[in-house]
Image (cartoon, rainbow, N blue to C red; front, side, top):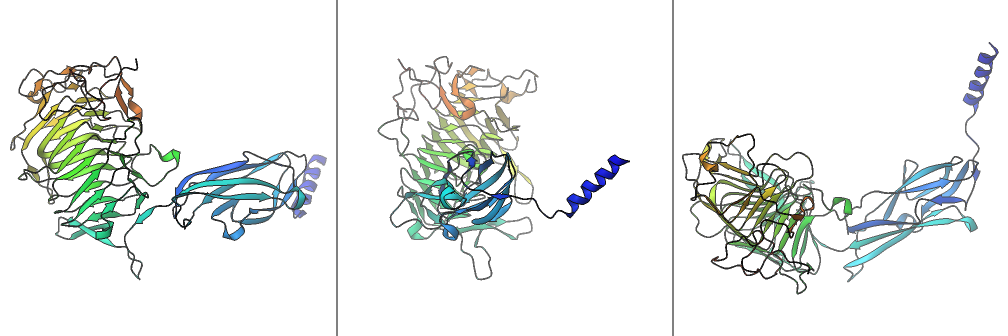
Length: 510
């Protein structure tokens, strides 16, 4: 009974107490770091949130009389202290031998005149007077050219048409047409694109060597019918340096986003756009890397792709529909679905390409290479188009699953293909494809000089480093009488006869 009475007294005393006593204290705090380095950001784009932990090592409760940014309300940094957002705070309680979190973000709106990169600095001040302590804040900010759709007085964002739905209604997406003075992307500043930047009919988008193009979520480039795009990346004099290649990627520069797929939309080449060319491009972290729509009657290539790599797309690295594509010395790496998809027929010639799907972001539904000659039209009807030819010469078709090739034919249309001096990951242990004539590897009309289920000895395939090592079965197995010849590999290194299969020529370090 006395124990219950004592408990009641304690509860009554604590319920009557309005607060705890905190001693104002400066100079005795400890911090998880003395400088918070926020990763590189573009002007006008907010950073990720970074964490600073503040410790009270004393055996008494304290109140920090002041916590705030040295530049006060004009600072480009923002804080969240003990669950409260702001830039300046007073009397922050901190229990004995306890800690609190301070969260830091930044957005820098305007670059100093003439500065392409600059350090944005500030500091967080703790306490007052002689005992005041501080933690430095440092962010590298890059100036950029921002391209985005207009917004009208009612807040409606500009859109562009992309086709008709089944009822004949126009479908539009958020985007804008590039003006004449926006049709040359240089290497002077990075470009950041919001929405789809469309190249209008009759125009040419030229992207210079060394250009860096960053895309916001659900953004990309659309090349309209009658327009074309030329990506003019080049090799550097030092083959180990890549400053002259062109890079397409997302607009989040933090290291945690370096290998995050699906950060942006696609590069979309529409039906009626022909003679597009891409050289020395790295395209990564898209939803669909390249979307190429062609026309069965066109004799001019939809796209010529050389010395380029596309990888880490959430769905497909290159999805072509009834297109004509010539690709050489190019790499199609890991993708959440298919590395290279030739859909609804078309005309494809790939020489010295590496198609290797080593996806490491969860379950993968598709193979490294898929070819078919059918699809659905806008009304949902199944239609077929001739696969006029799909020639793969000196190519690697590989990946992390047993079968990395899918061939699907509608008998209403032609289905012509040839693998010549290629490696092929096709280990049909379950006999699923037994008796299917498309997979008759002894048919010389379709398969010649095939290395089946060979060891490619890739350097780091799950990191999309698909250079081959000394134990690769692709070494010296290439066909050499190519027309036109390819005397160099994707890195500009001389191919040694007999050449190696794939985009990379093996070079011994000795």
